[in-house]
Image (cartoon, rainbow, N blue to C red):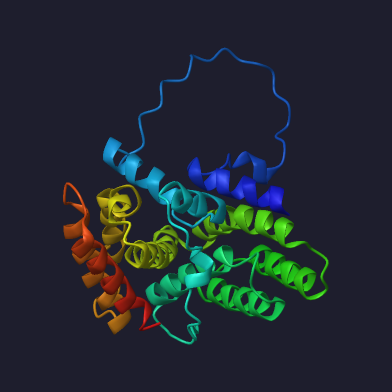
Length: 283
């Protein structure tokens, strides 16, 4: 199943698989001389700036190993998973932009606490993640895999190290499949939710340990902020967004101003922490 997901993700990234794969093999024909194919024109809309932003956004779903390593390299003692608040996030909302953001927050919290959370907490977060994906139009493969992981956790049939490996893999595979099935706008907003949570946790850790000199390398990402703003303000988005999406838009605009500075200091870290927290507190 996971191998099939990788095929879907690859097809989505390469602008679709060959239609002939769905039609079966055509009857064999005698070879005919054909001119060499013309060189394909570059795809529209993929200029250097777009590619850079997309490449950065692909890595936004938090990887525990990478995030904890970055924190350790900056001399920060706190573990991000220990600083996650026990929010009562639900998916009982109608606005799909907001559901995508909530799903991203839950995904970040799940990945960051895989090794330390209780079985009940992990299973509850997986169930919430499944609900978010269902509401966004995810297919049955994603739902079946989440059910399989939940059963393994409940039955102590998977170690935490193995579960960490599985979640690192699935956090990178589930989201591309969702893009394939639900639409390209969903993925950046899920990433936005994960990044929002990550930025809030990192800025909180920097504040607590007064490591403001590490802020530039971990929080100053203007291209990423621009990437999210593009999708929150996309053509076709709901014209009257609910208060959470409106606050997210306001927060992203604030973060753009902060991230555009040549260097970040204590006041900027505080702004990032408070503005991201304002959105998260509404979920």
